Length: 296
Image 1 (cartoon, rainbow, N blue to C red):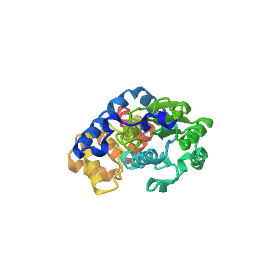
Image 2 (tube, rainbow, N blue to C red; image 1 turned 90 degrees about the vertical axis):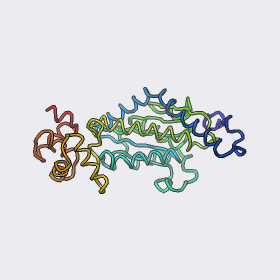
Image 3 (cartoon, helix red, strand yellow; image 1 turned 120 degrees about the vertical axis):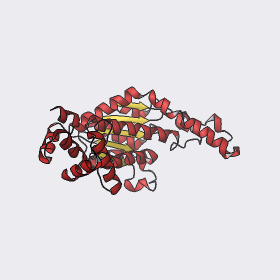
Image 4 (cartoon, one colour; image 1 turned 120 degrees about the horizontal axis):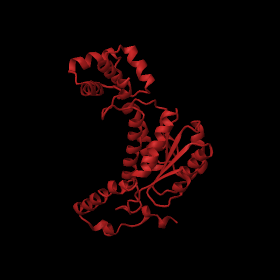
């Protein structure tokens, strides 16, 4: 029953919310938000399992696919669209699917989340394979759209992960890996864009970032696959080259140009004295890992 879900219960600290001063309410809200990271910490083992499965999928040519409705779907889309500029991934490598289609990101499509078949259809439309991994996101843990998608993914042998904000969730029982972060009742009853949404955003940050580190998208703690699509990012790329190789600005700028504005390639050229073509070839052989390329 809906009333049994933690995300639907009333928060005892805000029972008189409409009579509180703004400052008093914000202090309570801030205190509730502060709990989120500590609650996520309890799920690190499950998040680790999910990350390792994502790395396996990506290394085998599979895709990371987020599936959700409402706020959950929007957070999945947000994480997906940030991966190409941040990590240099192909736009088709990390995908966000939201009940009702992309237009639902801006305006709710009523009833779309209640359709299990729609979840299956959306995964079929992108030709889901057993090399992919599907991360279903639902604060309640019982959204039919997500359930249907996860069940279909299981049927074809894809890896599955459930991210929810209630323990013993339905999607947690369906998925092969479950991450259940119970943040307690919201300060505004049932408004899961608050603590639940914050927890989901933090978890998705962990899933994508740790996975990209695992597939060689970083060197030390530097974004070496950054796509320099504007002036700010071009300057950041030069700074990354300087940090990675301990060279000066003019040298970083020169090698950046010689490397066809590929940050990672420029770093390899500087660290190994290889030509552009040689650096590109070495990176292919090491699956894009700077550490492995240097060691060779």
